[in-house]
Image 1 (cartoon, helix red, strand yellow):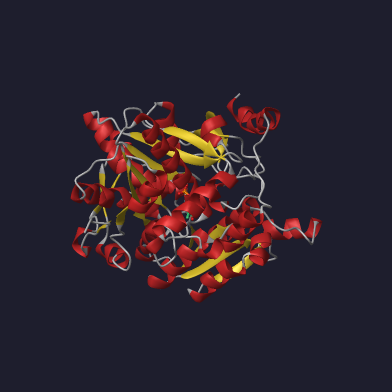
Image 2 (cartoon, helix red, strand yellow):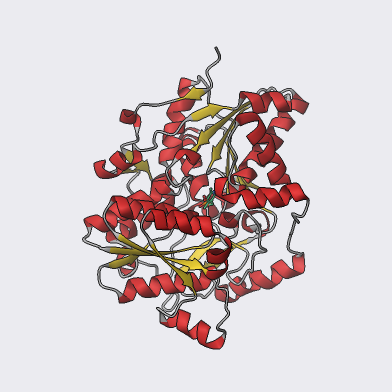
Length: 454
Ligand SMILES: *Cc1c(COP(=O)(O)O)cnc(C)c1O
């Protein structure tokens, strides 16, 4: 029988995260304080994030950061995740390419996000923190953090964009099941929320407002810290367990990837699968291609500009040197909620600028078409975000069919779509629409970032 899955024992759960910052030929440009324009120091982040995460954020020297045993023990509930050879997808496509995927959907939260949630909750607990806060749009990060908080005995408060709170009751129920307190945002519990409700009692909320509320609660409550599920360097660092395992599993399969693919929101699952392989590209010149798959509706890597911009809509965060389509960008309502962010993390942005990675953008309907084929061949219903990686993998596999090349393709399956079936319904009903901003629209949003670089 041909081998379908490549599994590692618990003892192979990585003992250290890989910090690509230490080996980058050009380090990311400094993160700047928005007022003074001075480079940020870890201490500047301590009021908001726990200290260990703040230190990791700005660490450009240590290539390996040890994973605490307590975190490895929690990882063992679902790691090492399987590496799977997608034979049936290959056959359906008639491609000579070998397609592998790393299955991060097997985590209790249903996505890769738990890899960082557990680390962030642990470091907070270790510092004596009792409460953690965050915001959530689609609910994936909120679900992961709720579970992680429960595991380390922390109280978890999640601000959920009011529109999603009402439209996505199951994500809310998942967070409640894991024991978190969920507040629809805007709320009356913060100054930021009150200001908005006073002006418009029916405001349906935004990610920007939910972030402001979560940060306000964190800085105004003793022993409370804020957490974030993507974009930041320490989040990407924690995700490298994905690629470190995949590297060993590809070796078990007797192969090495020619192409590594992941969907791209803020860049954490892309970093997770790509950096451990990219280490060989940077240090040994291995010729692997790394492709980020993003939605046409939010094309920061394919059509954005590399410059300093705010990380949030309200302009409260430090200035980040990144590929951006402008912090005022208003993303269309698409089903891949996790991919609707206006910027790319600063490490990925520098790697993109230096030619280490590529990006491709996809229409929503094409990604669902790819996701349905994947579900029917490989038996897993993918998250709408993950469908972008699948669409890209299929595109590359079909190119191999044309040229007869037997490439090895590896993609990350970032999550499952069981809580996103209404999106599949819409796809099947033929009502799903595509959206791509015009040049004029994009230029207008990018101008909001340009203004910060004068
Ligand atoms: C949040 C999310 C993403 C996008 O975030 P990244 O930080 O870019 O990885 C992708 N897939 C799933 C399933 C998610 O929940």
